[in-house]
Image (cartoon, rainbow, N blue to C red):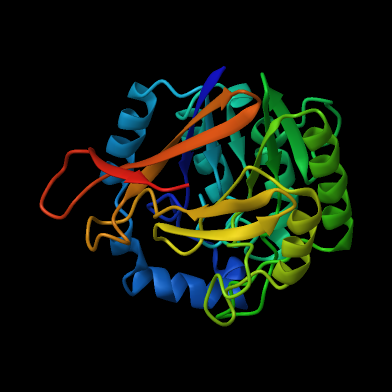
Length: 295
């Protein structure tokens, strides 16, 4: 079989709705100030729309969106974010995992659960919970939630014991079925994957789970740049791939707006993965094929 997966992240939908004064307390106040002081000019919605149109033209079998569609977790941001997610395709063909900007403060969490349920629901149905499992043919899509409310100026993430335990079960069961396992998470799940105050606090424990049960691909966002590292598994190693922000103003090669495409195939019982980047370059409004990367 063959399967085409598109991966994008960190859309940071704007413009930011006008907040009520009572909403600008604690972390939201610093986030709002940062937005007004220049963060709003780092993310361009025309760039994002062009990138999404190109993504849809590739006709992927599934789309993975790994978080940060919001900015400061305002209640008014959630319906805007949901409307944008709907432009990516039918929810059964689009999977979402939340980032730190989606779970910005504690009052955001109830909106997070209800708003994004169509894109986070497991095949088994019921109340959405993490990790969720969606099986498409021979592809197992496993969605994790690393976004948590944090103190001002911090952007770290955490899975927690319960979610890690369920991840261990999901990887073991889907691995026993011979499925191609794709893990979706917002924060880079490897140690030293992000700068101080921005990383996954239980990355070491995540690495240990993967070392015991394996996976075939892990994708994330958060750092706003393309990156590839590898984690050990029982049968070798698994690529951990970060993608640039989908709405970033075209700039340096590592930070320009882009998304990834993955071609999965199975030959003689062995899964093969080929990755390529499509995105923008400085001085161009076109989305171009920027080359392949080794996996």
